[in-house]
Image 1 (tube, rainbow, N blue to C red):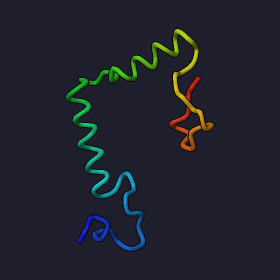
Image 2: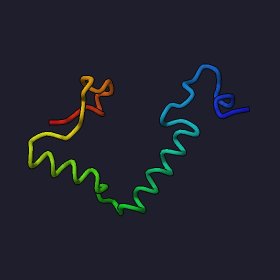
Image 3: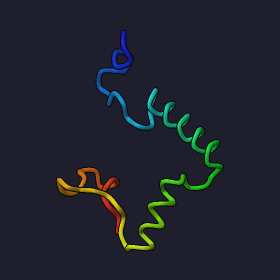
Length: 75
């Protein structure tokens, strides 16, 4: 029996906010808090500095905009 077998038949198998995925996400957030102590991760600071210097983010979108709006380049 795998992880997907334990999910009720009419529910999204890996929806954030439920079951295993929620637990994993909460552990991830706790780990990030321990590592970064509430500050932005270095990667986010680098992106912010790049936006300040050049007025845009540095993302390669050679095949057009990312289908996920949250993952698209911010100006």
